[in-house]
Image 1 (cartoon, rainbow, N blue to C red):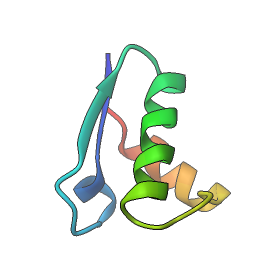
Image 2 (spheres, one colour):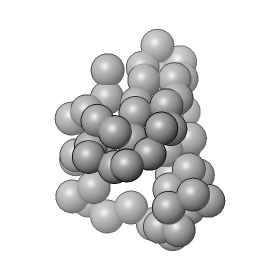
Image 3 (cartoon, rainbow, N blue to C red):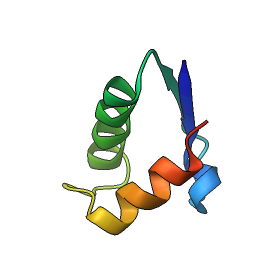
Image 4 (cartoon, one colour):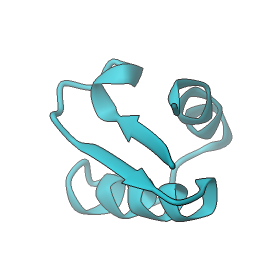
Length: 55
């Protein structure tokens, strides 16, 4: 299991999610970014930040 919290990358957001693997987690994060933060596509720098924060 891997997990992610928006607050771990400095976002003022209570979103937390877990998944069986990084690919599933990334899909959940991307969907959340689109639907809640109105970010249609995360750039490379943001993915690096996210992957560094994943647990």
